[in-house]
Image 1 (cartoon, rainbow, N blue to C red):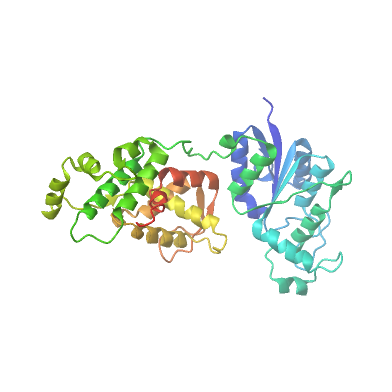
Image 2 (image 1 turned 120 degrees about the vertical axis):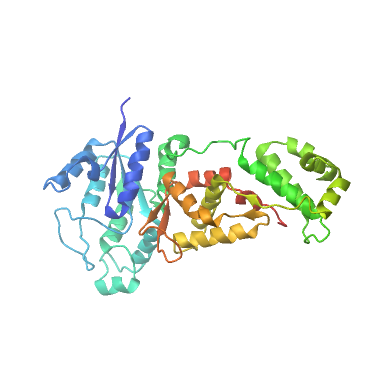
Length: 401
């Protein structure tokens, strides 16, 4: 089968994204072409070689962040020093003239700032350096001018680029490629670690939820018990188990819309209610700590990453901020404990990197003082991983816990 050739265009500030896209596009029978992989960029004819590759490809994907790129022929510059013509724009125009399908992706902050740039323009002239510096924009003038030219391109009286898609992470780009070019999501999204489609009936979290029910029963019949609504908690736990693992749990644990404590006690403690009371009074039976197994820690960490990704108000994507929220949530829930000697957060972070759901940027994360940043590579898969392994995603659903 002949592969569809796709030219990947972008500057050095999106190199990591291009590397990831190359890998994923191959999974769905595309043949990605981009200059870092296919030819020697030090060759004096490298720019013409770029354009030759564009002409020989079937489609083009253009990814822009803050840079406009190296000059092409015209080396005149704008006030900020960026060029008035770049190889990136020439690649784009080559594909446009050949009427090839094009997808354009623009970093979300740059997209917002391009609007600010164009609102401050008077007529067709680019901003002066003084005007540009006053706006404190991160992108280059050349990039903002290119965006404007691109948005005004027409073919047969219609806009050629109807939509410029925005992105924050690689996963955002992958979703839009999937949607625009009609490839099945199961193939294009699949990270090296493939999350199962359905929750495993032997999921370790079942035992953790059962242990939680046992502790709530003991707490209910302890004389000096804390003031919690154990019955409501148990009902909600059973509903979680029914939704995810099977409705038979309702028949085993519930009677007339309330917990069947006699049945629960026989099931979990193998004794009667009166015998349980005596064993609690003599301290033969006490509440116990519930230990998360490693995949639960990894799932709980993935859950915090998805929280931060979905919260657009969070400005700094520091790993330490993930750690703080992770620690805070682990301390929220009664009966669960963390083995601090094993440093489960660091192990979970390393696992998510190994699974290629996230990557870290900058120095190695070593603790509180580290300025390590993070980026999510495959958000849909990361979210599904959290749903599949996180125990906290269940505990969050308990109103009085």
